Image 1 (tube, rainbow, N blue to C red):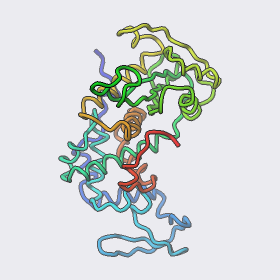
Image 2 (cartoon, rainbow, N blue to C red; image 1 turned 180 degrees about the horizontal axis):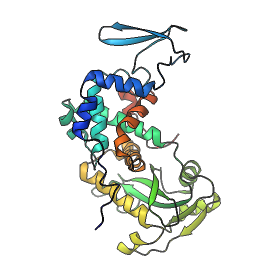
Image 3 (spheres, one colour; image 1 turned 45 degrees about the vertical axis):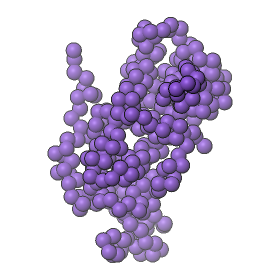
Image 4 (cartoon, rainbow, N blue to C red; image 1 turned 90 degrees about the vertical axis):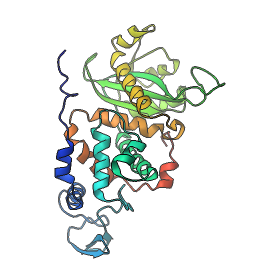
Length: 320
């Protein structure tokens, strides 16, 4: 069997990570370069000239034009953190370098922090991933499927619509009709009804896509939105996952579910499914350049607004 060049990328080794980001000073310089690649920019007036001073251990920058004061992490996802920057970068590395998911409990042990801290770090990172994936729209040939996270509760309804299950839509873009996948969108929906699918289609598909789905009735809204739509009669069993037009979306769906079920005993999919699914999409969409994953994600966190714990815990799975 031939070697898959994407799967066998070297990525960033732990030895390389320590050499690049092993001290607080190295982490600070790296974040400074990622936030202000062209040099300091005042967040209030975009001025370049600044002075620098310390209060305790914190370095402040004051704009000479408007006298606005800021820090390296102010106004970013890192704002207000009491953790060393090297702890944050190690978390970013672990969550992007592992082949499968990494639970907050395991992250806690790697970082040497308590569980609540590890949970906050992980969810802030996943929130940044979700925000980066929010505007993504697929083009061209798109395979789409419906799926659920979670299972039925004891004594409850079974099958579709069971209590405790979170419906989501998974879609894969291919560059040619049945070519290998290039990009994916994985997002929860309130239900598989016309209103939810119309909203999803408007936000997630560029005009003129050629789509492939199973026979779920709500997918007829694709035709109403002006997309070419092929309904696949795949039957059941393994043959359904191998059918042209459905293969890649089923491969990715299987990988996502195995990664989630194999790592977590349970997740609160009613609140946090959006982040877990966005994490899967974020990593999939950047899988060709693993060595760039850490700086790109750190830059995303620097561009995201602060997200304190009350906001993290008040999450919603749904857009808008």
